[in-house]
Length: 196
Image (cartoon, rainbow, N blue to C red; front, side, top):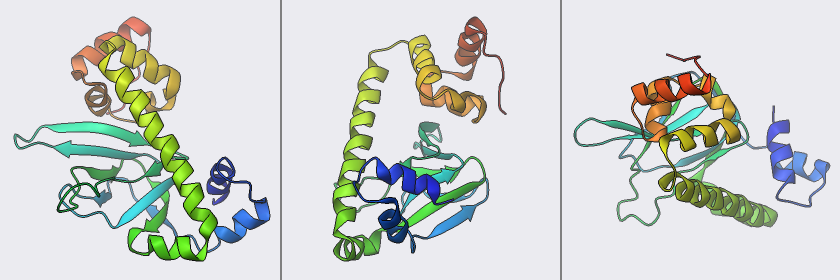
């Protein structure tokens, strides 16, 4: 199962396969059932994750009880809430497993110890974060300048697997539209399958 992690790490490192296997030897991997909440909105995050299999949703609930989906994390994606800029370090988001998941679990309290023990990890993590943040900026810029139909088509192009993996109302929230609008867009584009 850690093969997925090793292949991902190869993109950010010149280490040999043998060195990467050794580096991931003691990396904790855990299984989580569908519906497991990994982080509740308002909690201070003490873990980060990497998805080996499954799908994790990032969402928030506002004061009126409205739920908004901000992201879906699937295979070969890291799941980290960046909130060191906030005074109380509390998360503005919740994270929950939309499917049965197998995740690498990182303990943020020993992050520096890991870097001290394996200096190559710090450079690798920085490269991973730069890629993640760059992708988030690109996604945000594209999102605010596009129509709902363009957002849906971009999702079909970049992350087609999500269409049949997540409930339509969550997908609609992620795209910034109503479920009814998403149904109309899907009908026009010929993608009618819906996950409830």
